Image 1 (cartoon, helix red, strand yellow):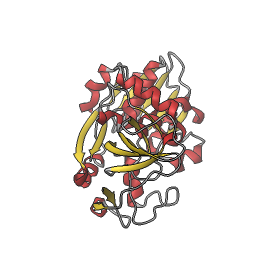
Image 2 (cartoon, one colour):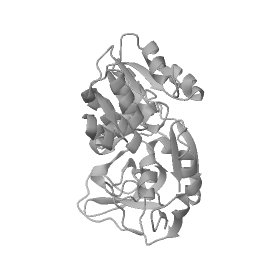
Image 3 (cartoon, one colour):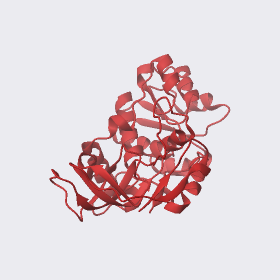
Image 4 (cartoon, helix red, strand yellow):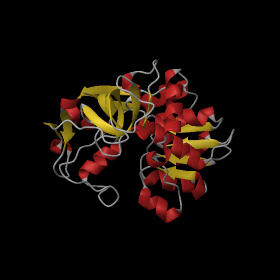
Length: 305
């Protein structure tokens, strides 16, 4: 089978597609033929070596967490799943950017019939992270919550989940993404110079919580706006969060079968929109990450093996 690999830390040019041995499911695992697998900023950071202390790589390394596909074989001790089942889920083994992957069945849920492969295959990291971030800041009906990079993979889901909880949401995003935010009942604010003043103008009664999906400058902005550290969650600025006492809940906390099933049902019946920015074949993995790393994508970029 074909799979994405990299042999050293580096830029996108270290990524390549290799012919590798077909895996076989062990006890409690299923072999999944991958139909779609989202890519994520964290994978780029891991590949560059920026998260070596937190998430070290061994080489040659695969990559990929998000996945959706069809089970082709199961190992011993598997109940509830069988060959032919359509599933979505996640891999902690950095293995989903490939034609096949073995996955513990505890990390798979059935794919609703009405859910596209592209959305199903990009739902875990962004969706689970958004769920965990929203839960961490404990939004209450009527409170104002600010989300940075609000039209990105995580942000676009987080703003919708916040609205479902009855929060008033301010989304920081480029002007190109303001129509999408407005269509989802989110107040858009453009990033850049004067951001603090624009947020204050949009929230005359103050900001009660803040979800950062971009960087440490937004943790500092939240504090400047008077948000208590325990009502701030960042999915990227781990060092700054530790310094100020903010939360860093992300995909590890949100990756449960219960969360994934709930997200899949919301997306399947149209209550949750998961924007798909682009799809790429496996061989164009470098191009996929080139687009992702511009950091201006609305929604998800997906590999389709």
